[in-house]
Image (cartoon, rainbow, N blue to C red; front, side, top):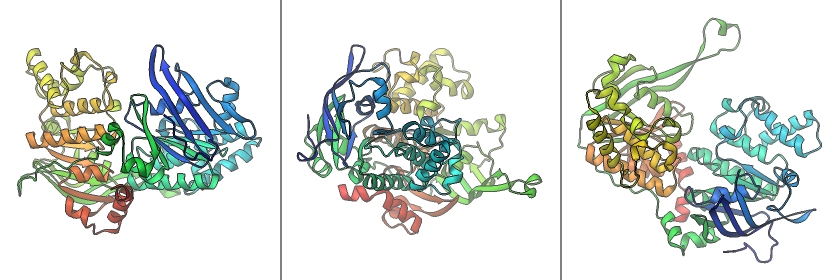
Length: 547
């Protein structure tokens, strides 16, 4: 399937009948598309659809993969060249110079042992005839062009010293170091909150216009596609099933898979909790602070203080979902850590009328009452433990009297509750986390939390790393479990669609303070605080355009 953006424009990149495989297994089958100079093309699909492998194979960045077909890059003065047949030495000159990449997770893509300035300067030195001092100055200028404050100081920072948004900007600066003609952006905003996401998109669009480069965006975020791309190409199981102008494809999708993706927005299916239901968790004047170094001689005697949560008051009732939204650094995760009894805090925080003692024996009962599901199940589940060991670990602590048969029945029953069974996965309990997809791993993490029959689940961005269709399934599962078990959720998220589908009550946090709180539907329809309005505006412009 081929659909050039403009028949009168010579394509910058022309891909024809691209086939990619590992050994005797083909994972991408006969993909064809064009990208013209200055064009933004979005390649969309679920995890496993082949979109990232398609993009990375253009520069032969996928180890052990073979590729056939043609991928012709037409850049002056060399003219048309097939990337799939070029020798490695020539291809190294093209990477970064003519075609650059922004990877999905900058924390793993950036070297933790070198400052971001050194890493950007290295790219400049590699491709341009500049001295070390000139390359460093160029690195600072690039950081400044991406909107990072104090670029000279940030250039001397290591990746872990930057926020998520700043690391992503550093990756963009590195990618633009040699003013490439084509930028491959692999899920560049997946892990960012809505305001940072919009800032990065605006930045990319501005840089794209200024430099006249083309962008191939790999994403599963349809709202991002609506607001950013000129054309969209949809992939399913390694096959390009549909492509065309964004407005046309979204308004009149022809393929069933495209329609499925467009229909995958979260659906609100919750019941209202009983009025004046008992409070399971409540806080009054909750304050969390961290010591920080103080400049000057005073810092020798007394450290400074950073207050992450400032006097928060809130209440979570039985059967209720309390959504906490805000930007990165707003204090959401710190509040969740305090609720879990993992972070000391001042003020009052009670779980079923008891306070955290921060002693293993005294807190054992509360550890069963309050469980957590983390953002990334792959990193929160031990790769060395089987499913049976992972899910059943809580029983060893809270129900040590169960025999092997009873333990196995409890584990299998809980897995069945979250949609995983031995009929679907033979030898389920003997499998390891890497044998499951992202959505299935999140179900495992949920089963691990549910096995001890908690009353409260702290959900820390439980769907932000999942595709839209899998996200919809996991949210529907959480809604069903809440109805059946009467669970209460403390939902930490930056996704307005998720909080709209799940929450009964919402708290909005900014710089450690709760700036607005109220019933979910009322607050979303009529936000009172300027910050809440800014959050909603950043999250919904594409939705409004797309219907």
